[in-house]
Image (cartoon, rainbow, N blue to C red):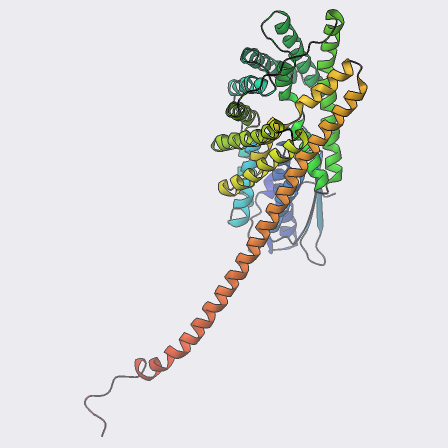
Length: 480
């Protein structure tokens, strides 16, 4: 593996090919500069929760924009492997490995890296200027603690009625979600791993929900618990894992699935232990009456929920409203399917399909990554109820229903991923076909213009040769 040179020496390399051909050493240093720049961009994207294919595509585009024909990039959720070659017979190959640690979803950084890649590949931006832009993106702070807390309050208040809770339950669900978020932030500052953080946070959510029920502050238990623990559900990890597997990235998909499985165990452990102790003291877990709301209220609840997750995932403010509308439309399709007895699996498939289609249109209109619209938009469809019901049946020693509910939950998560992959595949096919058709039409137009110019020039050239370029007649000596 090639050792990384000092950034001070690398940044003096320019992007132009004229400077790169000054000698073999200059080419070598230039390649290293481009490699480090591309890896830096890929590292920011991976740490921000971008998809594997997006990271590999961005890194490859940056390298090829600098006239490097041989580029190989292999990315996982724990590292990026990149090799570049000048293409010459005696040229050297440079391979770097970048370890990735600490992934947190930050869709604003993904959007800015996407814009940086577009600018870098289409303009004469130098490598030094590119490093400066990437450093500014890396140093960008997420939304403030106060705004994130407001987003948590929206999530808790709007998700509870989606799962059948009452309006009074929604108020205390919002309070519990906000307290759980603050507890999670405090636990994170202790440098504990994510398993302990999620376990303790979900245990706190369940304990506060039980206390509110026992004191008469709330009327239901399950909707409050589900709404409060949704903040920690690995819905994004499960969906991205299935998307990676269906896209052929089996290694990354397996790693993401293992990450989601560990998070699910932490949630089940935190909730299950508190409920088990409470059931032993109380005798039996209560069953809650589910409240059904009109469809327009479901639309409002889903809109507010998606808006809250837009804040949590640091979606750019210009996209928040449209992303929330996308999430609300997908959830209403899901509820419509349930209302007409079509089942949660078909409802999730159709709802996520609507989210994916609208996200593709929003991505083309806003010239931004589809991830910004898909990740917050599918959160209301994540099967949190199924995860909770599976754990509930385990606590009741009803293992047959637990296995059936767990399998159904996994199938629902898979149906969401399948729908997203199908829509994305058709979108790529349509975009590629339209691009090829546009190039073909442009080539035909250019050929036609060349023929017209050639035929018109030949027709207009003879009169000009006869009269326009001939000298004026001598009036003093007229002919004859």
